[in-house]
Length: 67
Image (cartoon, rainbow, N blue to C red):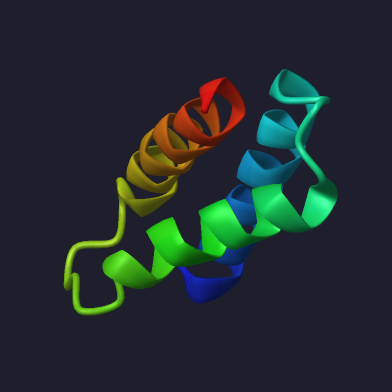
């Protein structure tokens, strides 16, 4: 996966999560995605990073909304 493709997919993750969590402020979604994304900075294999970022960010947002 190219860096440009990864960035495109991360943008799609943000859009998907913003739609899935309409009660969450946009900056909250942005922060959840950014924090999840940076956890994978050292990863050498990048193919599944967007999927893993979406899962982590979704868990984070779900716990923030329910709290």
